Image (cartoon, rainbow, N blue to C red; front, side):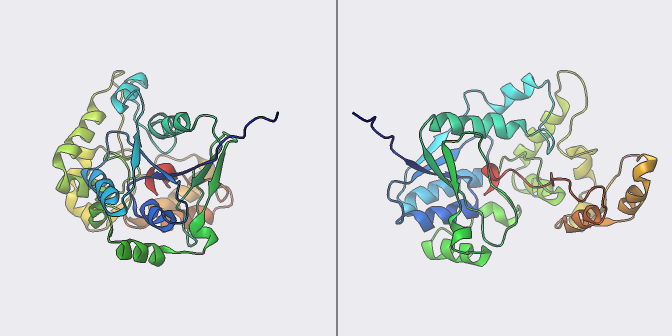
Length: 287
């Protein structure tokens, strides 16, 4: 007798952002047995939890919240106060990917990802061979305007945090732009203060900040210049080998709303043109 084949599971991971929400609407009637999960760190914005509640009510779907057995405070102590960063994204691994892969186990899973056809980025790739990614928006050539239309037609609309923030994620996400940190202060001062506490309470007494070379208190002190939309990015002392590039970067003023200037500066340098961008957030957090 042949072994009974495993049931294929279909899973959509919701971030609380517009793209995964639109994908939930888009696939709802196409995949009846679709599972909806939310990787809850416990440190999300209040607007995120509100939006997920709205999704449950309007779409009539069950959303399973997946949480790590250990929270962020536990792990930041394990890492001796070293805060996560683009170079060390331990928060994504410990609070999102590990609980997600544990929930899946050894089942064969079709994982649906809300990357649009007008984006040039990759999704979450698991090392597990039983997780197969699918990109419905790319396959059907849907772009940002289509996603907005889907959300408007469904009655969901956009999460409220989009009025001051460009992506979903934890309230202290290090991928926030500087003006978005100010937005956090304006909209949730108590959460901004908690984020500041993480910068000051370090077991090894070293200085760790969410923003490179600047604390949140220092950022808030120059609020007006941040909100003006222009700032001069501090640059570390460069070796003679890369001095020309450093001199160029020092002379550039960066808009807080657009990292394209920085990417252009790097792409024009042959030595750095093939480096992987580290200013883009993990899609498992932000779609």
